[in-house]
Image 1 (cartoon, each protein chain N blue to C red):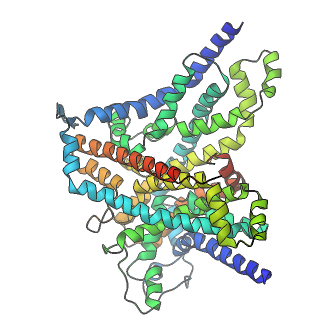
Image 2 (image 1 turned 90 degrees about the horizontal axis):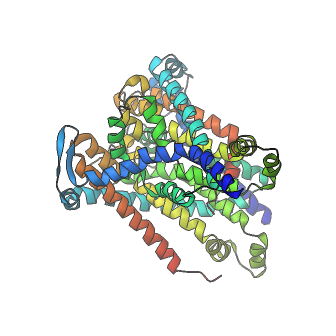
Length: 294
Length: 271
């Protein structure tokens, strides 16, 4: 009886699993294996490939431009994620204290940027940053300053493309944190209040330790996502000025477009994958080592 | 004292809410400005004359409307496929018993940890060899199987009480019948969440279309916008009108499903 049941299940299960397993094999697993294979070859669409051992990797590791791109990605992530996180953390506490009606409106409004594409965000902010009469320079002008070339000056470009990234992610991050805060029993906060805790104390001593895992998740996913940003620098600056906004993904894409030999590009992409993996692992270690006593 | 504090918080909250939507408002407004007013001096917040010509021109532009249409059709097909392919797998892993179940589960979940960038170029080589470049298929098929969405749905199915199926089993329903008649109707909340995420991902995508599509009849909307921006760098009013129109479907989608989406933050199991 049991055996026949299992056999019946087997047929149905394999038929129902065939699409997912087939698609993942063709579009994820084979490309990954292929990437590892190509990284050891001098490979192009037009010639026979030649085995070159680790020389693609050595080429990448000797390339200043690769490190520069990695560093740009890390800097970008370190601007965007901390600002976004702190703002979202504070604002989630603020929303909790609003009346249901106002809170509902605020939650809806801050969610909206989450559905907006990187391309649209890029275009809107390019318009706002415009040197000749953009809104940002109008405001700068009100303070009597000369117009600022937000996207054309090495000093400002990376910061300027960070702002739309913060804008896109701020609301959603806030709502995730708010969902976490709402799960904490009110009695915790009330008890703290009786003991004379102010809002700041409550955030540091109640919310932070209780939601440690949510925060860890948000920060790691945020950092790894931000390092891989593509749309904003592609549309707003195309990596310039002087490669100051050349994020790793844009760097890889630019190579893909200009370099007929895929070995270098693919090795760079695989190295990036390893580096991001190491960063995430380190983050988890770092936070877990600071165990909070329950 | 308490009341003042509450009022101040309300004002601060509303201010942040307005700042959040302001860039979109500013974009839509710029689309209504004549070319002479959209940038430059003197600075004008509102247009002196509301100019509908930018939006009007786009609505009559074959390229723009075709691009919106092609992207929309692609996004719908993509979304439907994502839901079916992944929910079938989710049901199998949640409810069926079969040999190599664990192995297959690990195989699928493992793909979650491969960043798309690491395989972007080899994926391109694979689809090029399969002669899929410049087809709607290349935009749709590679992203359909999704371990994250499968996992989300499996978690949801594990939470469905087994009693619901017992009557059907006694009536002699097949395992597929149980999926079809019991699980699918119960899946609406998780399907909405996954479906909207998939639609948005498809609609907003840039890098995959610019790599795989060079036939302009298949240009995706974000691709069209990005190219238009770099080709017509000074036509700001038109660019802003185009961006507004490209953002409208996503905002409508959000408006329709906002209850599910804001609730869905809890469902997505981040915690």
